[in-house]
Every structure is written in structure tokens, then in C-alpha cells.
View 1 (cartoon, rainbow, N blue to C red):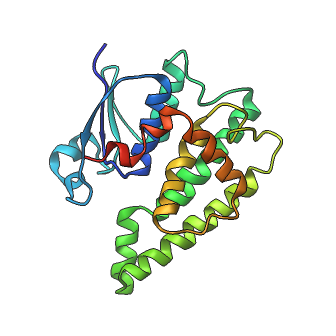
View 2 (tube, rainbow, N blue to C red):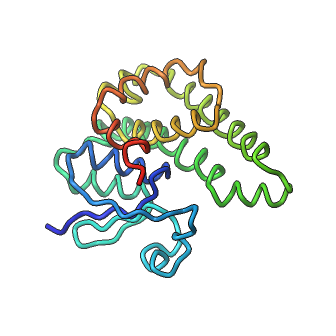
View 3 (cartoon, rainbow, N blue to C red):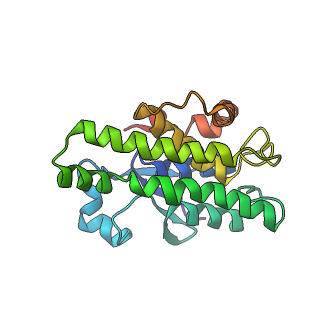
Length: 212
């Protein structure tokens, strides 16, 4: 089988998700850094891999894939031990809804390029960026906390084993802490974070562990 190569940036939420997923499966892989701050994602070599100029991109099973959630669902479909989407159709819908609430609602408006454009349009500096991040991450996680008020929430976002929802939550929570979002009232989220932190798959994927 071909070696798995993850083209990523250490602090990218989307890259962080895929690292967690690969770790949970026990899949070994090599990491190739794409320095976003150094604009490597805009260079021809990376654009050839990912026309959007985003991370991550993964070389796996002889294919080249982008989009973190699509990669995770591919792993779900091709790895026998994958349990990122579990249960019946209703269970899987809830897991996807929780995942999308972060990956498709919070994450895009807090993307590096989006925030840089906001700063340019407003002629603002770091204060504008911080206020933007705190507002949209804070509001998004507050809604996520309410979504967790369900009998289907267990030790993790859905049940007692980590799913794609947890894989999305933990990187977003890392960003919340980085931007000093007030998360003290998010009790369910913090309980899930504590449960995830006990698992090596999550701990070993943390940006501080993989920083070049």
C-alpha cells in the first residue's frame, strides 16, 4: 500500500481534524508542511495539488483528496475499524449536523483569508481580528453547546465513543482558547474536551505536538 502523505499546516483546524482521524484509525502517515503564513499554499506546486489553495490535501490509496470532512468520510467508507459515523440514519444525521455546524458555519468565516480581508476593508488591526474571532467562534460554540443538550450526547458528542463531531469540535475549541473566547459556560463542550484529551489520538494531533 502506498504511503499516506498529509500536506498540511500545523495550526490549521482542517488539518488537525484529519490528523485526529488518522490517529484514531492507527494509520501511519508522513506530514508535509504547507506554510500558510509564508504563502506556500498560493504557490504553483500546492495549487497543482489543491486548486483552492487550501489545506489539507492527502495522498492516500493512490489518490489525492482535499476537504477534511470528505477525507474523513472516505476513511469511514474504506477502513473497517472506522466509527466516525455510527448508528442508524438518524444518528448519522446528528453527527453530520454537529460536524457541519463547526466545519461549515464557524470555520469558514474565521478562515485566515477571510479575516485578512475584513482587516483590509476596515483598515483594522489585531483588535479587529480578535473581535471578529471572538464573536463568531463564541456564537457558534454557544449554539453547539445547545445542540449537545440531547439524550444522544454521552461521554462524547454522540454516544460514548468519539465520532466526526468530536474530531471537528476539538480543533475549533483550540482556536477558541487561542483567541481568548469565553468558554467557561460551555459545560458539555468542556466535559467532552476532557474526555478527548485522555485519548492519545487527540493528544498526539494537537498543534503543539506537530509544530515544525
